[in-house]
Length: 404
Image (cartoon, rainbow, N blue to C red):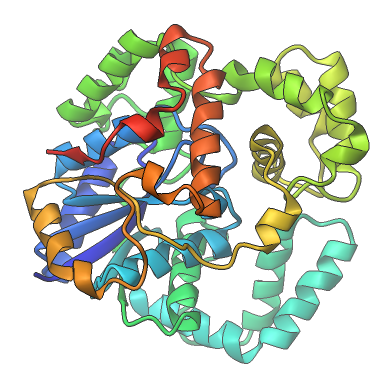
């Protein structure tokens, strides 16, 4: 059985994801599609709209054959480490290819970009360092440094100001760095870009746009044209059980408690908290009772909104710089769900896997990264502030991989 991998968050699973899934199967001519999916916290430093089990059901209902959890340490990391963790797992699962969506849509441009930055690595990193010393944020410094080293290049290159292009570049970089056997493919995003708002005249909207409608209007009928029926049903079920969709506004009372139970100095131990941000975060928490004013108080030209949210995510889960530095690659494969084809594929490759396959977390109590996933999940459910959330604490020990 030939397998291809995709890296996803499905926050939530929408028609654009369905297009990517279907085209990935066609482009790679694969019998099995494996999705490495973030757990309850995401790369942009925020809680997922609904939990990993609900998003796994969405994925399987739409045609994904096997869903694997991307450990918290990688799911909430900067783009290069996020990509490294995901590609390492897909390669470990014997996928022959991985297929990512991009604004570019041309694999040739990605290859040229990788070659350019590899050859000009010293000049590129020097330019980034120089720009950041001027107070420019890391993403802007990356883009400006890229423009500097690529100004005289005539071959097609990728626009690295686009979010999916950035991730695509890092997927290819990870595959090369890891000497992985897995081969890249890309599919161009259709209609909606990453940050676009949802338009009622379209059938495809970005996940960002869909979430904005849900938070602003709290009405699933407003987004039903952008979602497969199975996703809409899953979101309806979640709303009925959990009362509300997860976001930082909902989680802020618990986040604020966690911040203020620490001293300013002790906040600096948590991953990505740097350059005095511990002072700004602690001070803002003492005076702001809701999340948006709190963020407005601490936002900075130096750090993007996403970077600050990642700091807050790590404070929320108490994930430290030491834990981050001790984390190199995923140490296990954890299936969240599968259909019959996905189960058959796992059985076929099981004896050749170089990583332990974890279906029951109770049997892997000593795994440091897995314990972090469990802790993050429990705190996510507490953040929901509902009886459902209270009941879901400890669910990683009770819920087996979903079979569909």
